[in-house]
Image (cartoon, rainbow, N blue to C red):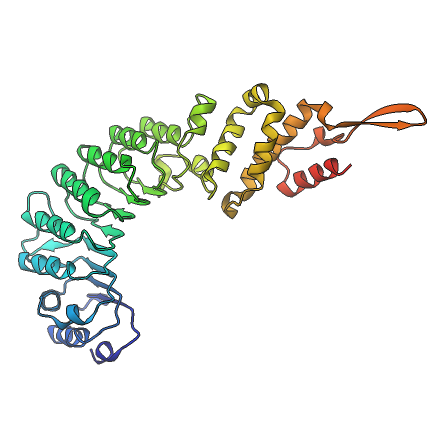
Length: 390
């Protein structure tokens, strides 16, 4: 308590009860609370575990902490037993935190033992009104995992997010058991062209194949979502195919080019088996990734349609800045395409040498046809440079 009260540079504080098997005593809680209310430097504050006495007093609007601390940007409460008055007070003080960018109310329980933010409880309505009152806050992260959010509540939550949380980038709904009935509002959120959501956690939400189809369809034209966690849901081959097609629709060159090139991770995606397709999206240059997919799955068609016209695009793509995790694989595919074009258009890479009146035709890429296309990028590049430098 003394340390908290006197600290001027402490920015992160987590209070975890029952870590050693013995609960924090009421006396200790009050000592911490007394020091905390005088602190002015904490930016990230998280409560975990049953702290009934301290938390009830801490979230009281009269607490000096809320008037003195203007730097709090991250507030989280996890696994707490809260009463109705606690929730009302928490929502009241949250609206006063003008710099709050991250809010988490996770795995909390009411005093009667029910899940805290459940669908049939007016506490969720209070929470939604709080989000409305935070319309001008820079809220970027919202964590609600472990709450029994139903379909009706999900509709209201998405409606509120779209209208009052325009800067939201991360939404965690893990273990909320929302089911397939809540997929419509989530799909509408992902289709919203103004959405900035880059991370959506739907781990263990009792979703089925119909939900996978809806989410995959909603992501077809989404250019913001990079991370989606879909593990421990009820997906079958039908759901897996929906996301494979989303990431790379191989039905035509046009469909492959317009596939989703933004989604980079599906969390623990053993159920979706899309590792190799997600790896193709690991690049900052999404046009390069679209080009790479087209070359990878439609090379023979491209050679027939475009031939040497494809070379400038490939060379431009090879020169684009890419993440290390994708650098080698992407360049190997594109270099292989370049060599295929070279082999199919030998006249472009030949020159005539006149010696004592005799003319001979020389192939500057002679020997490259025997190059293995599974060679390293450095080997392929050296071979190409050798040919072009003749």
